[in-house]
Structures are given as C-alpha cells and as structure tokens.
Length: 305
Image (cartoon, rainbow, N blue to C red; front, side, top):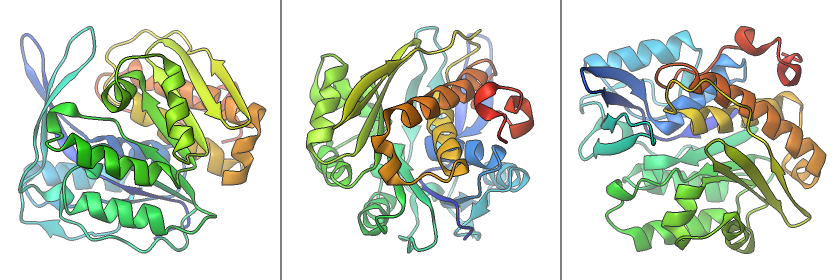
C-alpha cells in the first residue's frame, strides 16, 4: 500500500429518495473520505469489501478513476451494502441494509508504512470490520496520525453500550476525533460543544466538533477555540462531514505535519479552515461528490497543491 492514508470502513450505495424520484449514488462515509483524499492528490488505500454485483462494479470503477488503492482487490460474492436516504431540508435520514453484505467482510491489515489511519461510521459497528478497525487503530505505530469519525448511526446500532465501549478504547489513543453535535447527543446526551471534554478526558489528543453551518469548535489540552464555517449555497449535505475530515487529513499530510503538531493552535485552525473549504464545495454539489485538486487550487488554503 502507498505511504499515505489507510481508510478502513464501508462502501455502499445511497438510495436518495426524493419526492419524485430515487437516485442511486455510491457512498459510505469511509469511501467518501478515501475519494476526497485521493482527489486532493493524497495517496490513499481503502480496506472495504467490494461486491461483484452491478453496484459493486460501479464502486470499483469510481475508486479506480480516483486512484484509490484497494487493500483487498478481489470481488466479493456478497451483495453491495445499501443505505436508503430520505432527503430532507433538515438533513438526511438513513435506513440501512447491512447484514450479509460485502463491505464488512475484511480482515485487519498491518499498519506499517502509512502516515495516517482513518476509521469510522458503520465500520465501527458491523463485524468483522468493527474488530478489524479496532485492532488496526490500537496497534498502529505512534507516528501514524490516528483519526476517528464515529459518524454515529443510532438506527444501525443494535448494542449502543458495546459501541460506546469500543469508542472509549479508540478515543484513548486517537490523535483526532471528529464528531458532530448529533454524535455528541448519541454518545453523551443533550448538551453543548463542551461535551468534547469527555473525549479529551478519555485520552484523545484533539477533538473537532462540527455543527452544520454554525462555528466548528476545536478542543485540545492546551487550547479551545472556534472557527467560522463559510457560507454555502447548499444543494444537500450528503458527504459534507466526510469531505471535511478527508480535506483535513490531506492538508495535514500535505504540509508534512505529525501528530505532535496538533498542539499548535494556529496550525490546527488553518487546517480546519482548509477542510471547511472542501466541505463547502461538497455541499454545493448533489450527493457525496468531493472536489478535485484542480477545482480548489485557486483557494488560499489550497494553493500549495
């Protein structure tokens, strides 16, 4: 695998249900992260089982076009994982078809040469991928930037207690934890952004809290700050959080930064501004369609590309 980012998690097809039609769009939080990284010219490997069915063939072609390397390149005999997404102005609502599907039938890789490791979303819930993600995350060398986005899916979480226990183990070694306010609600109950302190107390180095169009808050043992979110002509928000964290990782690795650099508030703030520009672009497209490097290279935070 290339010496870039290893992404572990599901690939799937989002069936976007509008009032007058249904659109089938490839997706899955981790797949969106991998495509964001690769489109921003950041070498990326994806660990996810890909079906040999028609949807799986589309997913494989899309990953090949974006130059995402597959850790397990063979086609699975299992069907593609599906998410039924109700498109609503208040935000997408999800129902999942997960059991006995291709995405999750993987084994834990050895993380040796990677510079970053991302885990998240349904890959932290469905076995055997959930255990493979945990093993890889806990055993990764300390030089690897370990990033987790729970991207909680309550409707798919049959054992919330077991899920929260797994997250506590992962938070203990995480360098970056990206959570939405909805994630915090599911994990800790209603409250403010300061619930992120509970994740810091569990051992995480940095916590990033997103809140839709409202300011992002950054939490570290040495600082707490907020970053404004740029205004966007939103088409839909599918994949916005995924492209945000993919943009963050791409910017961080592109500037040759290490986990220790997360202690520098100014550097992390600059990375968040850059990541927000990627998320904004995604929100202004239909579906999870992150930008290519050429589409953002004129932006101040991405001219280095």
